[in-house]
Amino acid sequence: MANTTQMLNTVFRTCPDTGLKFHGPAENLIKANAVAAVVFLLIGGTFGLLVGLTRWQAVHLLGAEDFYLVLTAHGLNVLIFWLIFFEIAVLYFCSAVLLGCRIATPKWAWAGFALMVIGAVMNNVVVLQGNSSVMMTSYAPMEAPPLFYLSLILFAVGALIGCFVFFGTLVVAKNDKSYEGSLPLVTFGAMTAAIIAVFTIVSGAIILIPTFLWSVGLVGEIDALAYRLIWWAFGHSSQQINVAAHVSVWYAIAAILFGARPLSEKVSRTAFLMYILFLQLASAHHLLVDPGVSSNFKMFNTSYAMYLAVMASMVHGLTVPGSIEAAQRARGHRAGMFTWLRKAPWGNPTFSGMFISLVGFGFLGGITGVVMGAEQINLLIHNTLYVPGHFHATVVLGTTLAFMALTYWLVPVLFRREIIFKGLARWQPYLFGLGMTGVSLFLMGAGTLGVPRRHWDIGFAGTGGITHEFPAAAYTMLALNGLSVIVAVIGGAAFCVIIVGSLLFGRKLGDQKMEQAWIAKPVTDEEYNANGGSAYAIPGTLALAMIFFVSFALYYFINWKYLAETWGIS
Amino acid sequence: MSDHDSDQSGPVPMMQKLLDNPFLLLFIGVASPALIYLVWGLAEIFTVPAR
Image (tube, rainbow over all chains, first blue to last red; front, side, top):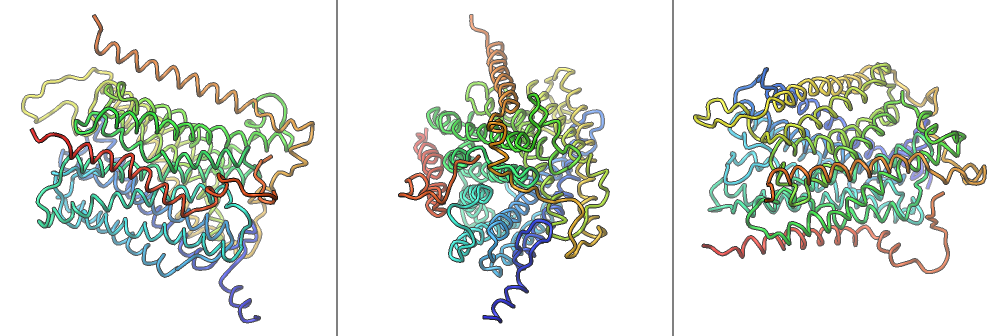
């Protein structure tokens, strides 16, 4: 018995600042995945700068061949490698650490990590060799070398192993009785992400394995329409893993910084259930002009079913700031409608990053996603730069910024190092958020003017006869996008410098407690019920929600007006 | 504040049982989009008349 206790003490450590219990192998796996994520963010972000500077017509940095190579590398590194590595870290954190148990099958987890690293590195090498510039979508019959598909398959298998290690850890926690009752909400959100990830990766396998076999000559033909349908179950659903993961991060940060409890766990869990049921169906909006599927299929998937997932996002968008408002009011910030928000720690990058992520995801990513999902108005912007504008709002402003925000909190907890360049860290979320807001808005602006998303040069140089001229405003939009890219890249680079610098040179904390409290005490029932239970009222959040609804309705109907102007009715 | 209370006595509601079962949720989360999106979509694509 004494031996077992001694052994457990060497495998587990308790964080002096947060009281969280870390299982050694889980901790090492979280660190490895998080570090790999930041490395691929750095690589992908650098490629993103080159893309932005090429789309800026006055600069037009790269030639056509290099542009498509760099665009392929940018998409895969940031949309797949950075995010999924970080998500695996989040899954392990939300299971082994938040449930205070050992991680299941650490050897398998390391094998999964190794496969992911091999796949990601191999993919970069193959793409940089120059004959895999098929972009992230790699639409068949456009063909890349077999190693391109193999690298993605290896990465996907590694990530799938990570998901099953997560599910295994839930079983370990239940058997060890390390938690009672239901899973904590943040872990439940992470589980939602893992479920979506399993569907995503299985879909990827269904399409990438035959495509790999086709590339080596063992399969005669890949049906182009079927490829698109199945590929988007992989390509778009992978972005829905991000949504579920970053919403979980929002809830986690609300609890960490404010001691906030969700307004209603039942409602929040039901919203996650709606993600599980419906979020993946948004993949169909990529097929809205495809001839092979019917309007019934398109409308059911992108409207009727998908709107239930949109409603779930709106529930989270209300309950996360609502829970912060309630906690702030319970702690004394009751005056007026927005004192709770004014008194929030805006100088703490964990909070500012999370809040900018929430607002950006809702107002820019969410609203435009619904517009794109409506079959009729989708025609206005289908396959234009509007689409990258939309997903830069969801995946970069929403997910990446939320992950950056959490990282600022995690570095001292996980690595026991103090964050360096605190002044720069205070500004980093604003810089990155501002730049990425610009990127999203100006790309969507150019898309609304009809600029195609996949063309290297909107002046159509060297195309031998295409004479279409875009309005001057389109060129201005692309120039403003280029400037915004520079601001965002400075913000992204600052993040990498701060985090890598902190890991290498930050003051070692060891078992020493930090000066400031690193996790807020949970708000008590007494605090919530003080002053006649006024903390239960959340007028500020409701006012913000009303602003959101008005913006949503206005923007939706403006697009219908655009459509009406496109095809006049006589 | 939260209305969730794991200490409540009495039978566990069906919905709660569902939400507390990760593997049932995993099955639903994979089967549901597989049917509604993949199977339905592929059925339509492969039944398009050849010419």
